Image (cartoon, rainbow, N blue to C red; front, top):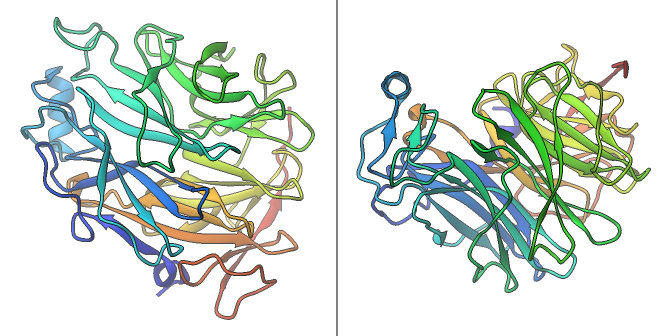
Amino acid sequence: MTRARRCRRKIVGWDCNPPDPFPGYGGMVGLGQDAAQLANGDWLVLFHAGYWHISLATPYVVAEPTLRKWHERGFRDIDAPRGGRIMAVRSDDAGHNWSKPWTVYDGTWSDTPVGLTRLANGELLLFVNQQASWYGLSVAPPGHLPVNTRIGVMRSADDGNTWTEPAWLEMPCPFYQRAHAQAEVLPDGAILYPTYAADGAGTLHGAIHRSDDAGRSWRLLSRIERDDGQDLDEPSLTLLHDGRLMMLSRLDAAVWYSADDGYTWQLSHHAPFAPLKAHRTAVLADGTVVCWMTSNGVLRVSWSQDGGATWATDGDGLPLALDADFYGYPGGFLLGDESVLVVYYDAANQQQRTSIWMLRFRLNALRSKLEILPGADAGPVAETLPGTEELDADAADHPSE
């Protein structure tokens, strides 16, 4: 058994601490999940609960070719009058025990958490993906949400006990807007959030939204298009120690930089992550950027000590496998001891019955090894831990041209 199998922990799932049944729940949890450490030290995990990869509210309108493909992959006909919902669990003992799941938000259409950020004042920002009940069509059917997907922002000032209604972000393109990222806070207190949007023609474009009042209101700061005509999908933001912003995007792991707080962007090079999906980043005290992600079908980790110019890889030139058993699609956050808590899901059983897992890792002091940490709690920093699995990394150069 690998160290990941010994150290990971299932915190909620169809067969472990499951949500109470509700119309539209079929045993699927995850795909959208994220976590934050609260001001009182508790850990909060938010996740999607429904019946499949896309838990549409019923009745739905889906193009017949799309619906056939979905059924082949596990989609089921189920009564779900409000689709999937956002739920949460909480731990007050560093992940050893978790509360029973409760509902955070259940809108008219299907809802998924796509980012959770705690601000310096302790308030929480939750970014919500709301999926309309139509798919594979060029325009919305009568009586349905007019856009295929939209992103909203909810706020909590009491450690996630109560939340505001979503404030919907401006649509940079008319067809849909989606996201999978955490917000980035600038030194002046402004908050940036990256999304991607479709214009109906099939090409995905990036967008940056900005708030200057702690997430209460938002404006569209910039739209980002690639000159090569490729998709700009699932962008993330990372504030580097030199003041630049770095953006990574799916699937080709394109690395972008901005020197003007996200207003303009330049595509620099590609990281060795492709195909990259659902990545998150954190910056350590020495400026090292840590990235955890789904790549080549499993949960992986890489890091950069030069602002994203080069990245650590294994002997095959890939990011290091953190948990090779599972697909991942992770969320998570950086703890005070500079370890990273990752929450991810297993995509099992054709995504009909799934589970959410947690695992903790950190880099050694020399930034040469990945340490998978024993136990669920974040203990004191140590150079090495007895029994800790250490995964070596080779520094791979990737030119900026």
